[in-house]
Length: 404
Ligand SMILES: Cc1cc2nc3c(=O)[nH]c(=O)nc-3n(C[C@H](O)[C@H](O)[C@H](O)COP(=O)(O)O)c2cc1C
Image (cartoon, rainbow, N blue to C red; front, side, top):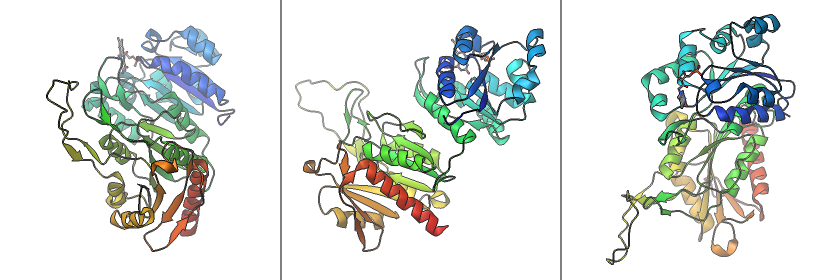
């Protein structure tokens, strides 16, 4: 109940993603918030006032020229009684009107009249999002202090692919909680990026190169960082795991996507690279499914993927002050980790033996040797991945405590 007693004015504008706002209302109320809604004319084309009021258990506001509404509440009060105004989904149109200072309907009038913080959750077609006008509008809004959650990359209702999808509801709730109920904990106020899981590198549209990483260790570390108050972005390859509570989730497929997502998440003070990133990808993934044609298996030429850990560890003035990598090894575990720590300019490497008989990949336990670029090795007893996560996060807390 992180939002107990908090009041949110949710403005639902006109986009396909408006159905997600119904779930958003439910989740915010589960956290204890009171949610009052404004439905734009466009929004009402996608969700009904009846659904919105049934879920919010509040009157739904739609019309700026409603005598009854003005007598009961008034548009100025509506915008100021809330602790936060959230526009979700935020259409290209409403963001353009916000950026221009228009007050052409109840939603934009409330947004112009408010003295409270505002958050937008854009959702639109990739071309609409990438259009110079939309980009200029979002920049204007950001420069005025408007918080922006998403959009994310993915398939769109219109059949296209790219940035423009509304962020997942749990990520919107996490952003609202982070704003309205700031965290306490040893890492409060610090930002962390964690990578997790395998990457998938396409051979053709139906086949890919991958590895046995389950994501359990990376997800556990992200969850532990969030519990300790860090503003945590979890960049994950494909896994079957649920999203950990309180983290901002970015789901990717390939090593190149993972690097791009990490770079977008910078600046951060902490980077923990746990993902088992594929070292190589197929140089020219086939556009169509490869067929058996009697000529033997197709030759697969590989090219090298970007090295995410190395790139983050030398990211110039954006280098996180603490860069931690994992080394999955099957032989010379400690020596290889020490070499990796120096070669890649990382601060710590957590080496783990992933030979098949250890059960580390996919299992619940892990045996860690922590190296830090000196000759010393800290060998931890075998423990669960959650325990590894807690121990690492408490060590990270100690690092910042000591260097503060
Ligand atoms: C089927 C359909 C889907 C639409 N989806 C979106 C969308 O996802 N994002 C968006 O910005 N606009 C979308 N639009 C366009 C907006 O609904 C339109 O710009 C509308 O004027 C927005 O009104 P509002 O900003 O007052 O809510 C869509 C329109 C239609 C007909």
